Image (cartoon, rainbow, N blue to C red; front, side, top):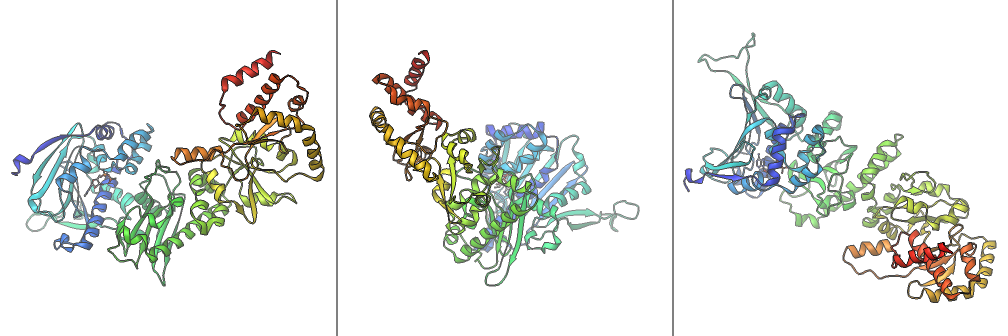
Length: 635
Ligand code: ADP
């Protein structure tokens, strides 16, 4: 194919176009982030080359000194970012920065807040980094040659960021990518050595690939120095520290540097909440730098959510999203693990059953739990509160997934409780136990769809009366949690809506026995009326104010769990509830005196339906319920 014939113009895909429009027309603050994004892409490209070259050394083609070069031309008003990394083929250019918007682009558009500063900061998080060039440029030229490809197989991409871009084959004498930004009117200030250096220092200092700039030497009067032939004298200067941050000594790293590195690995814009940096030497040597973010990412509960710990071997980037390094319930942790013992050609398959990885993972999980424990212990409770709001629901998956650390994770959990006046989750199981009155040997909880339903549930009545604290569980994951966390510190976790309670004193028990005798025929009659709908009717020990409630037997599946299973397409055995009646309640007492069969049926149905409503369950026959209520109201 001749160079001429290779030129074509392609349209951006809709979402890519929307992003470009945003970049070009509406981002006014934090404009300098374009450089962070482009340097970060260049650094990733170098990492990728280094990794591919592990298997095929010839890709280096004699040049294994990877670096990024930032140049500017004050007169032409251009900035050029070049790297000698992996480069791209024509098809890769089309796929990566062309017609197809990454899945991140869509999410970015959805997540836009309209707040300029925030939206600009989010750009990186959604993988639309390259397009940020158009914040400052009205034309962008990218020339790229894939490592291993011939000089005449290079490609030039060019666009003004409006609707389309052009592609043509060119010659490029070295591999890698060169991005030339033609600065917009009014953005020329960026084409200055001081400005560029300051930005690189601020955002890209921790990048392990050297970022170089060519400097003109100045004479005493501040004019460009010239050699005897009249040529300007220049120097190559490394602008960033260019050493892997995690490999440096802790004492030499400032909090700001930790923060910037976090932003680089996580693509988050906010500062991290906390981090732990440790070097392990001995049997196995590795370094880990693990962060807890402040805010949850937008896809925390997506099935495809990527885990955030990157794997390095001897400073060489191996892979992102190394799921074997962190369990699912710690998927919010970001950072780096760098092993000295793994082979450089480690693959995902090898990782799956690798003893070194297993040990690193086990130790890293313990480190993270330790970090959370100290965050919680900290007198300044605010940080743990922030953590809990962001990731508490995910941590609750811990006791389900990680048997070995179950008790330790359970100690980190916070719950809402009847002890509080608000729906705030801040009661630990240890606190609960410390408040238990003598004689209480169980940890009581209730599960409901929301806080108000939990708090006002008839099941709590007798607990309120006796002053027994009950944990109020309303998160989706709670049902799973308590099915795995059945005991804590030797105490059983007991649902107040299940089985028979043994919190009654002798006196209560006698009363109940007598009432059971008095109600035996009513219960028999009512059971017939509700046949097929319930398992049985019995008199309640839980109710003091409400006439009726539904309970489950100890091992029956709850309606919430049934819903979860059904939503997941699994078979969920339906279990019928037990209807409990409050023998002290006037409505229930009335049943004893009703002689009219129709009326008895209406009352019985209503007692059952009320209990369903209070439990947040849908009524099978809502119209029938309304009719019955109205009939009685009219009387
Ligand atoms: P992200 O880097 O978050 O994936 P970008 O829009 O910045 O999103 O880049 C899209 C893709 O283009 C990158 O994933 C990469 O494959 C490719 N790319 C960008 N810059 C370079 C570069 N300098 N060298 C090689 N590939 C690049």
